[in-house]
Length: 489
Image (cartoon, rainbow, N blue to C red; front, side, top):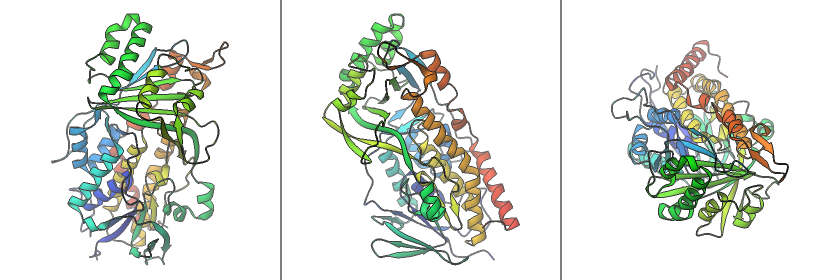
Protein backbone atom coordinates (compact mmCIF):
# COMPACT_ATOMS: atom_id res chain seq x y z
CA UNK A 1 0.00 0.00 0.00
CA UNK A 2 1.36 3.47 -0.83
CA UNK A 3 2.04 5.73 2.12
CA UNK A 4 -0.85 8.19 2.52
CA UNK A 5 0.98 10.92 4.38
CA UNK A 6 3.62 13.08 2.66
CA UNK A 7 7.28 12.22 3.13
CA UNK A 8 8.73 14.65 5.68
CA UNK A 9 12.05 16.09 4.50
CA UNK A 10 14.23 18.54 6.43
CA UNK A 11 16.70 20.62 4.43
CA UNK A 12 19.34 22.23 6.64
CA UNK A 13 20.64 25.37 4.94
CA UNK A 14 18.83 27.99 2.85
CA UNK A 15 21.54 28.61 0.29
CA UNK A 16 21.57 27.84 -3.41
CA UNK A 17 21.55 24.04 -3.05
CA UNK A 18 18.97 23.96 -0.26
CA UNK A 19 16.43 26.35 -1.76
CA UNK A 20 16.77 24.95 -5.27
CA UNK A 21 16.05 21.47 -3.92
CA UNK A 22 13.18 22.75 -1.77
CA UNK A 23 11.49 24.26 -4.82
CA UNK A 24 11.99 21.08 -6.83
CA UNK A 25 10.29 19.00 -4.12
CA UNK A 26 7.20 21.20 -3.98
CA UNK A 27 5.83 20.19 -7.38
CA UNK A 28 5.49 16.70 -8.80
CA UNK A 29 7.17 16.45 -12.21
CA UNK A 30 4.74 16.17 -15.12
CA UNK A 31 6.37 12.91 -16.10
CA UNK A 32 8.94 10.43 -14.84
CA UNK A 33 7.79 10.30 -11.22
CA UNK A 34 6.61 7.34 -9.17
CA UNK A 35 2.95 6.51 -9.55
CA UNK A 36 0.87 7.38 -6.46
CA UNK A 37 3.77 9.28 -4.91
CA UNK A 38 2.55 10.75 -1.60
CA UNK A 39 4.34 14.08 -2.10
CA UNK A 40 6.53 15.90 0.40
CA UNK A 41 6.25 18.04 3.47
CA UNK A 42 9.43 20.12 3.25
CA UNK A 43 10.96 22.25 5.99
CA UNK A 44 14.04 24.42 5.41
CA UNK A 45 16.18 25.53 8.35
CA UNK A 46 18.72 28.34 8.13
CA UNK A 47 20.99 29.25 11.05
CA UNK A 48 21.38 32.88 9.99
CA UNK A 49 18.55 35.34 10.64
CA UNK A 50 18.55 36.35 6.96
CA UNK A 51 20.57 36.42 3.77
CA UNK A 52 23.98 38.08 3.64
CA UNK A 53 25.10 40.34 0.81
CA UNK A 54 28.51 38.73 0.41
CA UNK A 55 29.19 37.12 -2.92
CA UNK A 56 30.53 38.82 -6.03
CA UNK A 57 28.33 36.95 -8.46
CA UNK A 58 27.37 33.59 -9.88
CA UNK A 59 27.92 32.41 -13.41
CA UNK A 60 25.45 29.90 -14.81
CA UNK A 61 26.60 28.11 -17.95
CA UNK A 62 24.39 25.75 -19.94
CA UNK A 63 24.77 22.80 -17.57
CA UNK A 64 23.56 24.90 -14.63
CA UNK A 65 20.73 26.46 -16.64
CA UNK A 66 19.36 23.07 -17.66
CA UNK A 67 19.46 21.84 -14.07
CA UNK A 68 17.78 25.01 -12.80
CA UNK A 69 15.17 24.74 -15.56
CA UNK A 70 14.28 21.31 -14.16
CA UNK A 71 14.05 22.51 -10.55
CA UNK A 72 12.78 26.08 -10.70
CA UNK A 73 11.99 27.22 -14.27
CA UNK A 74 10.42 30.49 -13.09
CA UNK A 75 13.71 31.53 -11.52
CA UNK A 76 15.68 30.71 -14.65
CA UNK A 77 13.19 32.66 -16.77
CA UNK A 78 13.65 35.70 -14.56
CA UNK A 79 17.44 35.42 -14.62
CA UNK A 80 17.56 35.10 -18.40
CA UNK A 81 15.19 38.02 -18.95
CA UNK A 82 16.59 40.39 -16.33
CA UNK A 83 20.09 39.05 -15.71
CA UNK A 84 22.66 41.50 -14.40
CA UNK A 85 24.89 40.22 -17.17
CA UNK A 86 24.61 37.88 -20.11
CA UNK A 87 28.18 36.73 -20.54
CA UNK A 88 29.51 36.78 -24.09
CA UNK A 89 32.75 35.19 -22.97
CA UNK A 90 35.76 35.79 -20.75
CA UNK A 91 38.90 37.35 -22.20
CA UNK A 92 42.13 36.31 -20.49
CA UNK A 93 44.83 38.99 -20.65
CA UNK A 94 48.38 39.15 -19.35
CA UNK A 95 48.72 42.04 -16.95
CA UNK A 96 52.41 42.06 -16.04
CA UNK A 97 55.82 41.27 -17.48
CA UNK A 98 57.08 41.60 -21.03
CA UNK A 99 53.80 40.27 -22.48
CA UNK A 100 51.61 42.72 -20.52
CA UNK A 101 48.62 43.78 -22.59
CA UNK A 102 48.61 40.60 -24.68
CA UNK A 103 45.37 38.67 -25.11
CA UNK A 104 45.72 34.97 -24.36
CA UNK A 105 42.31 33.72 -25.48
CA UNK A 106 38.56 34.17 -25.17
CA UNK A 107 36.61 31.42 -23.45
CA UNK A 108 32.89 31.34 -24.21
CA UNK A 109 30.34 29.05 -22.61
CA UNK A 110 28.22 27.25 -25.22
CA UNK A 111 24.95 28.93 -26.20
CA UNK A 112 22.26 26.46 -25.19
CA UNK A 113 18.55 25.87 -24.88
CA UNK A 114 17.34 23.52 -22.12
CA UNK A 115 16.43 20.49 -24.21
CA UNK A 116 13.78 19.31 -21.79
CA UNK A 117 12.00 22.67 -21.63
CA UNK A 118 8.26 22.20 -21.25
CA UNK A 119 5.31 24.55 -21.24
CA UNK A 120 6.02 27.49 -18.97
CA UNK A 121 9.76 26.79 -18.94
CA UNK A 122 12.37 28.88 -20.67
CA UNK A 123 13.23 27.99 -24.25
CA UNK A 124 15.32 31.06 -24.96
CA UNK A 125 18.80 30.40 -26.33
CA UNK A 126 21.41 31.99 -24.09
CA UNK A 127 25.07 31.67 -23.23
CA UNK A 128 26.28 31.88 -19.66
CA UNK A 129 24.35 34.31 -17.48
CA UNK A 130 25.52 36.15 -14.40
CA UNK A 131 23.51 37.05 -11.34
CA UNK A 132 24.32 38.39 -7.89
CA UNK A 133 24.27 35.63 -5.31
CA UNK A 134 21.95 37.47 -2.93
CA UNK A 135 19.46 38.24 -5.70
CA UNK A 136 19.51 34.65 -6.90
CA UNK A 137 18.83 33.24 -3.44
CA UNK A 138 16.09 35.79 -2.88
CA UNK A 139 14.42 34.72 -6.14
CA UNK A 140 14.52 31.10 -4.96
CA UNK A 141 13.08 32.13 -1.60
CA UNK A 142 10.24 34.12 -3.18
CA UNK A 143 9.31 31.21 -5.43
CA UNK A 144 9.31 28.81 -2.49
CA UNK A 145 7.03 31.11 -0.50
CA UNK A 146 4.75 31.53 -3.51
CA UNK A 147 4.17 27.85 -4.28
CA UNK A 148 4.79 26.39 -0.83
CA UNK A 149 4.17 27.14 2.83
CA UNK A 150 5.90 30.30 4.08
CA UNK A 151 5.87 28.91 7.59
CA UNK A 152 8.06 25.98 6.54
CA UNK A 153 11.03 28.27 5.83
CA UNK A 154 12.72 28.86 9.18
CA UNK A 155 15.45 31.48 9.71
CA UNK A 156 17.54 31.82 12.86
CA UNK A 157 17.26 28.06 13.50
CA UNK A 158 20.72 26.70 14.28
CA UNK A 159 21.01 22.94 14.30
CA UNK A 160 22.33 21.51 17.57
CA UNK A 161 22.05 17.74 17.18
CA UNK A 162 20.96 14.96 14.85
CA UNK A 163 19.69 11.67 16.24
CA UNK A 164 18.90 8.82 13.86
CA UNK A 165 16.46 6.31 15.31
CA UNK A 166 16.05 2.61 14.65
CA UNK A 167 15.62 1.44 11.04
CA UNK A 168 12.09 2.82 10.49
CA UNK A 169 12.09 5.43 13.26
CA UNK A 170 13.27 8.43 11.24
CA UNK A 171 15.48 11.30 12.37
CA UNK A 172 15.16 13.76 15.25
CA UNK A 173 16.62 17.26 14.92
CA UNK A 174 17.26 19.54 17.90
CA UNK A 175 17.99 23.25 17.61
CA UNK A 176 19.87 25.68 19.81
CA UNK A 177 16.62 27.45 20.74
CA UNK A 178 15.45 24.28 22.49
CA UNK A 179 12.97 23.17 19.83
CA UNK A 180 12.99 19.80 18.09
CA UNK A 181 11.37 18.16 15.05
CA UNK A 182 11.02 14.66 13.61
CA UNK A 183 11.58 13.80 9.92
CA UNK A 184 11.77 10.85 7.60
CA UNK A 185 15.05 12.13 6.13
CA UNK A 186 17.47 15.03 6.56
CA UNK A 187 19.47 16.65 3.77
CA UNK A 188 22.36 18.88 4.78
CA UNK A 189 22.91 21.90 2.55
CA UNK A 190 24.63 23.81 5.33
CA UNK A 191 27.93 24.77 3.72
CA UNK A 192 31.52 23.69 4.22
CA UNK A 193 31.16 24.00 8.01
CA UNK A 194 28.21 21.59 7.86
CA UNK A 195 26.77 20.00 10.99
CA UNK A 196 24.96 17.31 9.00
CA UNK A 197 28.17 16.26 7.24
CA UNK A 198 29.66 15.16 10.56
CA UNK A 199 26.77 12.74 11.08
CA UNK A 200 27.00 11.43 7.52
CA UNK A 201 30.72 10.66 7.74
CA UNK A 202 31.02 9.84 11.41
CA UNK A 203 33.27 11.66 13.85
CA UNK A 204 36.58 10.14 12.76
CA UNK A 205 36.10 10.46 9.00
CA UNK A 206 34.59 13.92 9.36
CA UNK A 207 37.80 15.03 11.04
CA UNK A 208 40.01 13.27 8.49
CA UNK A 209 38.00 14.70 5.58
CA UNK A 210 37.41 18.17 6.98
CA UNK A 211 37.56 21.28 4.83
CA UNK A 212 41.07 22.63 4.38
CA UNK A 213 42.53 25.94 3.31
CA UNK A 214 42.89 25.94 -0.45
CA UNK A 215 45.73 28.46 -0.33
CA UNK A 216 43.93 31.39 -1.98
CA UNK A 217 42.03 34.51 -0.95
CA UNK A 218 39.91 37.13 -2.69
CA UNK A 219 38.44 40.61 -2.29
CA UNK A 220 35.45 41.91 -4.24
CA UNK A 221 33.52 45.08 -4.91
CA UNK A 222 30.91 46.45 -7.31
CA UNK A 223 31.15 49.98 -8.72
CA UNK A 224 28.76 52.05 -10.86
CA UNK A 225 29.44 51.93 -14.59
CA UNK A 226 30.10 55.68 -14.67
CA UNK A 227 32.91 55.24 -12.14
CA UNK A 228 34.34 52.28 -14.05
CA UNK A 229 34.38 54.21 -17.32
CA UNK A 230 36.76 56.78 -15.82
CA UNK A 231 38.84 54.73 -13.39
CA UNK A 232 38.98 51.45 -15.34
CA UNK A 233 37.96 51.49 -19.00
CA UNK A 234 39.59 54.77 -20.01
CA UNK A 235 43.11 54.01 -18.68
CA UNK A 236 42.90 50.39 -19.85
CA UNK A 237 41.93 51.56 -23.31
CA UNK A 238 44.89 53.92 -23.46
CA UNK A 239 47.36 51.25 -22.33
CA UNK A 240 45.95 48.60 -24.66
CA UNK A 241 46.01 50.98 -27.63
CA UNK A 242 49.67 51.63 -26.91
CA UNK A 243 50.56 47.94 -26.52
CA UNK A 244 48.39 46.73 -29.42
CA UNK A 245 48.87 49.23 -32.27
CA UNK A 246 47.50 46.76 -34.83
CA UNK A 247 44.26 46.09 -32.92
CA UNK A 248 42.90 49.61 -32.36
CA UNK A 249 39.37 48.76 -33.50
CA UNK A 250 39.22 45.72 -31.23
CA UNK A 251 40.42 47.72 -28.24
CA UNK A 252 37.86 50.44 -28.89
CA UNK A 253 35.08 47.86 -29.22
CA UNK A 254 36.01 46.39 -25.85
CA UNK A 255 36.74 49.57 -23.91
CA UNK A 256 35.43 52.45 -26.02
CA UNK A 257 33.08 55.18 -24.88
CA UNK A 258 30.13 53.07 -26.03
CA UNK A 259 30.94 49.70 -24.50
CA UNK A 260 29.72 46.97 -26.87
CA UNK A 261 27.64 44.61 -24.76
CA UNK A 262 27.75 41.99 -27.50
CA UNK A 263 31.47 41.68 -26.84
CA UNK A 264 32.97 39.64 -23.99
CA UNK A 265 32.01 41.30 -20.71
CA UNK A 266 34.39 39.56 -18.29
CA UNK A 267 38.14 40.09 -18.24
CA UNK A 268 40.73 38.06 -16.36
CA UNK A 269 44.07 39.80 -15.89
CA UNK A 270 46.82 37.39 -14.83
CA UNK A 271 50.20 38.34 -13.47
CA UNK A 272 52.52 37.96 -10.52
CA UNK A 273 50.84 36.10 -7.69
CA UNK A 274 47.21 37.01 -8.31
CA UNK A 275 44.44 37.41 -10.86
CA UNK A 276 42.01 40.31 -11.25
CA UNK A 277 38.57 39.86 -12.81
CA UNK A 278 36.45 42.73 -14.09
CA UNK A 279 32.91 41.96 -15.20
CA UNK A 280 30.52 44.44 -16.81
CA UNK A 281 26.92 44.11 -15.62
CA UNK A 282 25.02 45.56 -18.57
CA UNK A 283 25.23 49.36 -18.38
CA UNK A 284 24.68 49.55 -14.65
CA UNK A 285 27.84 48.51 -12.85
CA UNK A 286 31.09 46.58 -12.95
CA UNK A 287 32.24 43.91 -10.53
CA UNK A 288 35.90 43.66 -9.55
CA UNK A 289 37.38 40.54 -7.97
CA UNK A 290 41.04 40.19 -7.02
CA UNK A 291 42.22 36.74 -5.95
CA UNK A 292 45.68 35.71 -4.87
CA UNK A 293 47.85 33.17 -3.11
CA UNK A 294 47.62 32.86 0.67
CA UNK A 295 51.38 32.70 1.19
CA UNK A 296 51.11 32.69 4.97
CA UNK A 297 48.04 31.19 6.69
CA UNK A 298 45.61 33.85 7.86
CA UNK A 299 44.72 33.89 11.53
CA UNK A 300 41.06 34.40 10.71
CA UNK A 301 38.78 33.36 7.86
CA UNK A 302 38.57 36.99 6.77
CA UNK A 303 40.76 40.04 7.17
CA UNK A 304 40.82 43.64 6.05
CA UNK A 305 42.95 44.30 2.97
CA UNK A 306 44.35 47.69 1.95
CA UNK A 307 45.78 48.88 -1.33
CA UNK A 308 49.29 48.89 0.14
CA UNK A 309 48.90 45.30 1.34
CA UNK A 310 47.90 44.16 -2.14
CA UNK A 311 50.73 46.10 -3.78
CA UNK A 312 53.22 44.27 -1.58
CA UNK A 313 51.82 40.98 -2.89
CA UNK A 314 51.89 42.07 -6.52
CA UNK A 315 55.18 40.35 -7.47
CA UNK A 316 55.84 41.77 -10.89
CA UNK A 317 52.70 43.80 -11.39
CA UNK A 318 54.35 46.80 -9.68
CA UNK A 319 52.58 50.10 -10.39
CA UNK A 320 52.22 49.11 -14.02
CA UNK A 321 49.61 50.39 -16.46
CA UNK A 322 47.20 47.49 -15.88
CA UNK A 323 47.26 47.00 -12.12
CA UNK A 324 46.83 50.69 -11.28
CA UNK A 325 43.37 51.21 -12.84
CA UNK A 326 42.17 47.90 -11.43
CA UNK A 327 43.18 48.94 -7.91
CA UNK A 328 41.81 52.45 -8.44
CA UNK A 329 38.45 50.88 -9.18
CA UNK A 330 38.62 48.29 -6.41
CA UNK A 331 39.34 50.94 -3.76
CA UNK A 332 37.46 53.83 -5.36
CA UNK A 333 35.41 54.69 -2.25
CA UNK A 334 36.83 52.48 0.51
CA UNK A 335 40.39 52.50 1.94
CA UNK A 336 40.10 48.85 2.94
CA UNK A 337 37.99 45.85 1.94
CA UNK A 338 37.43 42.51 3.62
CA UNK A 339 39.24 39.61 2.02
CA UNK A 340 38.12 36.00 2.47
CA UNK A 341 40.28 32.93 2.18
CA UNK A 342 39.19 29.88 0.20
CA UNK A 343 38.29 26.50 1.67
CA UNK A 344 37.52 23.22 -0.07
CA UNK A 345 37.08 19.49 0.52
CA UNK A 346 40.05 17.66 -1.05
CA UNK A 347 38.38 14.34 -0.28
CA UNK A 348 34.92 13.08 0.66
CA UNK A 349 34.27 9.34 0.80
CA UNK A 350 30.46 9.47 0.71
CA UNK A 351 27.57 11.93 0.65
CA UNK A 352 25.05 9.65 2.38
CA UNK A 353 24.45 7.56 5.48
CA UNK A 354 21.06 5.91 5.88
CA UNK A 355 18.42 8.63 6.10
CA UNK A 356 21.00 11.41 5.98
CA UNK A 357 22.62 13.02 2.94
CA UNK A 358 24.59 16.17 2.11
CA UNK A 359 24.49 18.31 -1.02
CA UNK A 360 26.10 21.52 -2.26
CA UNK A 361 29.08 22.91 -0.36
CA UNK A 362 28.37 20.56 2.54
CA UNK A 363 29.29 17.72 0.19
CA UNK A 364 31.85 19.23 -2.17
CA UNK A 365 32.93 22.78 -1.32
CA UNK A 366 35.26 23.99 -4.05
CA UNK A 367 37.28 27.07 -4.91
CA UNK A 368 35.71 29.58 -7.34
CA UNK A 369 38.39 29.41 -10.03
CA UNK A 370 36.18 27.67 -12.59
CA UNK A 371 32.96 29.40 -11.53
CA UNK A 372 31.24 26.03 -11.10
CA UNK A 373 30.42 25.73 -7.40
CA UNK A 374 26.88 27.05 -7.80
CA UNK A 375 26.38 24.99 -10.95
CA UNK A 376 27.16 21.65 -9.34
CA UNK A 377 24.99 22.58 -6.35
CA UNK A 378 22.04 23.16 -8.69
CA UNK A 379 22.83 19.86 -10.40
CA UNK A 380 22.73 18.22 -6.96
CA UNK A 381 19.21 19.58 -6.43
CA UNK A 382 18.12 18.28 -9.83
CA UNK A 383 19.43 14.75 -9.21
CA UNK A 384 18.23 14.60 -5.61
CA UNK A 385 14.71 15.77 -6.44
CA UNK A 386 14.52 13.36 -9.38
CA UNK A 387 15.47 10.46 -7.12
CA UNK A 388 13.10 11.43 -4.33
CA UNK A 389 10.18 11.82 -6.74
CA UNK A 390 10.86 8.26 -7.88
CA UNK A 391 10.51 6.54 -4.52
CA UNK A 392 7.11 5.37 -3.28
CA UNK A 393 7.28 5.72 0.48
CA UNK A 394 9.48 6.95 3.37
CA UNK A 395 10.90 3.54 4.26
CA UNK A 396 14.55 3.04 5.10
CA UNK A 397 15.00 1.04 1.88
CA UNK A 398 13.58 3.70 -0.41
CA UNK A 399 15.27 6.72 1.17
CA UNK A 400 18.63 5.00 1.62
CA UNK A 401 18.48 3.77 -1.97
CA UNK A 402 17.84 7.29 -3.23
CA UNK A 403 20.71 8.73 -1.21
CA UNK A 404 23.13 5.97 -2.22
CA UNK A 405 22.27 6.47 -5.89
CA UNK A 406 22.86 10.19 -5.42
CA UNK A 407 26.37 9.61 -4.09
CA UNK A 408 27.20 7.16 -6.86
CA UNK A 409 26.29 9.49 -9.73
CA UNK A 410 27.53 12.75 -8.20
CA UNK A 411 30.74 12.12 -6.29
CA UNK A 412 33.18 11.66 -9.18
CA UNK A 413 31.82 14.62 -11.15
CA UNK A 414 31.97 16.93 -8.14
CA UNK A 415 35.45 15.71 -7.20
CA UNK A 416 36.60 16.56 -10.72
CA UNK A 417 35.40 20.15 -10.26
CA UNK A 418 37.22 20.47 -6.92
CA UNK A 419 40.51 19.20 -8.33
CA UNK A 420 40.25 21.04 -11.65
CA UNK A 421 39.39 24.32 -9.92
CA UNK A 422 42.38 23.96 -7.60
CA UNK A 423 44.68 23.42 -10.59
CA UNK A 424 43.08 26.41 -12.29
CA UNK A 425 43.82 28.61 -9.28
CA UNK A 426 47.47 27.61 -9.28
CA UNK A 427 47.65 28.28 -13.01
CA UNK A 428 46.05 31.72 -12.78
CA UNK A 429 48.29 32.77 -9.88
CA UNK A 430 51.58 31.86 -11.54
CA UNK A 431 52.19 28.61 -9.66
CA UNK A 432 52.25 26.40 -12.77
CA UNK A 433 55.75 26.53 -14.29
CA UNK A 434 54.39 25.27 -17.62
CA UNK A 435 52.54 28.57 -18.16
CA UNK A 436 55.64 30.75 -18.50
CA UNK A 437 59.11 31.28 -17.13
CA UNK A 438 61.06 33.11 -14.46
CA UNK A 439 62.37 36.50 -15.52
CA UNK A 440 66.11 36.42 -14.67
CA UNK A 441 66.22 40.21 -14.29
CA UNK A 442 63.29 40.62 -11.87
CA UNK A 443 63.05 37.13 -10.39
CA UNK A 444 59.29 37.16 -10.98
CA UNK A 445 57.25 34.59 -12.89
CA UNK A 446 55.98 35.85 -16.24
CA UNK A 447 53.18 34.30 -18.26
CA UNK A 448 53.74 33.44 -21.91
CA UNK A 449 50.60 33.69 -24.11
CA UNK A 450 51.08 30.52 -26.16
CA UNK A 451 51.86 28.34 -23.14
CA UNK A 452 48.98 29.85 -21.16
CA UNK A 453 46.51 29.27 -23.99
CA UNK A 454 47.51 25.63 -24.27
CA UNK A 455 46.83 25.09 -20.58
CA UNK A 456 43.45 26.86 -20.66
CA UNK A 457 42.07 25.14 -23.75
CA UNK A 458 39.47 22.48 -22.97
CA UNK A 459 39.56 23.08 -19.22
CA UNK A 460 35.76 23.51 -18.99
CA UNK A 461 34.74 20.78 -21.44
CA UNK A 462 33.99 18.06 -18.90
CA UNK A 463 32.06 20.49 -16.69
CA UNK A 464 29.91 22.06 -19.39
CA UNK A 465 29.38 19.14 -21.75
CA UNK A 466 27.04 16.88 -19.82
CA UNK A 467 23.60 15.54 -20.75
CA UNK A 468 21.45 16.31 -17.73
CA UNK A 469 18.74 13.96 -19.01
CA UNK A 470 21.22 11.07 -19.20
CA UNK A 471 22.52 12.05 -15.75
CA UNK A 472 19.01 11.80 -14.29
CA UNK A 473 18.25 8.51 -15.98
CA UNK A 474 21.50 6.98 -14.73
CA UNK A 475 20.51 7.94 -11.18
CA UNK A 476 17.00 6.55 -11.59
CA UNK A 477 18.21 3.20 -12.92
CA UNK A 478 20.56 2.84 -9.96
CA UNK A 479 17.71 3.67 -7.59
CA UNK A 480 15.35 1.13 -9.14
CA UNK A 481 18.00 -1.59 -9.01
CA UNK A 482 18.75 -0.95 -5.34
CA UNK A 483 15.07 -1.03 -4.38
CA UNK A 484 14.45 -4.20 -6.40
CA UNK A 485 17.45 -5.94 -4.85
CA UNK A 486 16.93 -4.48 -1.38
CA UNK A 487 20.64 -3.64 -1.22
CA UNK A 488 20.64 -0.16 0.31
CA UNK A 489 22.08 0.13 3.79
